[in-house]
Image 1: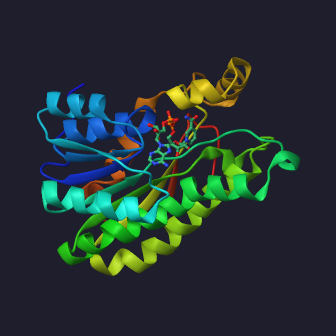
Image 2: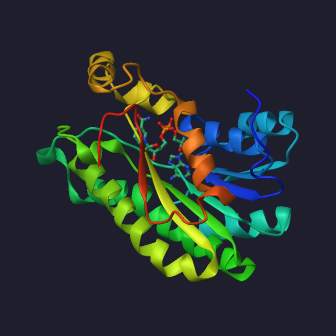
Length: 250
Ligand SMILES: NC(=O)c1ccc[n+]([C@@H]2O[C@H](COP(=O)([O-])OP(=O)(O)OC[C@H]3O[C@@H](n4cnc5c(N)ncnc54)[C@H](O)[C@@H]3O)[C@@H](O)[C@H]2O)c1
């Protein structure tokens, strides 16, 4: 598909971009003209190759987004490479099922550290330069599970509820600096993580409840993330958009 040049010469950080949603988001941002900082626990070499195929530059930074020092190190590497950052996509996350009575405090904190605290750490690292530039975009990945009665996900729904609240609060704090902050909520999808986590019956069941009766795939969130990270969304902030086949209605 030919994408419009909505992101020419922007520099975008995408966390968790070695695979799944993050990789698809990084590649489409590049196809729309952005250079990419791919942060992941794993080497994002395949993402970098796809970005370069699209004619843009990318750097793979192996860092744990739950580790404040690692995030600061990633910030330094990103600025050494590109000199600035305009867009932050907070995508890294995990969504293991666990019955509430089997969730201990360490597990609860681990899920919140990855799905929520990491978004605070990266926002603290990358938003000051957006503030100084007078322009920026933050897009946080939430989840449509917040609007559903899914069992054994209270730890996850709590962390993603935090993402929605953080998005709303940060949107107000950063608006004076030309920075918008929004969230995108996908449905249970056939990403590598999704296929590992969800039994086929669950994926089939979710698809059957959506208005658009097929499972989501990684490319189903990219258009919404690109809109929210473009100039087009200059007057849209603090919102959570369901990119979920019409399952959850706000
Ligand atoms: N796939 C779904 O069904 C679904 C549904 C709703 C929301 N989401 C959300 O979408 C996001 C991405 O999901 P996905 O399905 O693409 O996941 P995935 O498991 O396929 O990919 C996640 C990526 O994040 C990286 N990562 C994990 N922990 C990290 C850490 N501490 N530091 C840096 N990188 C780390 C992994 O190495 C991996 O490359 C998550 O926030 C998830 O909660 C997914």
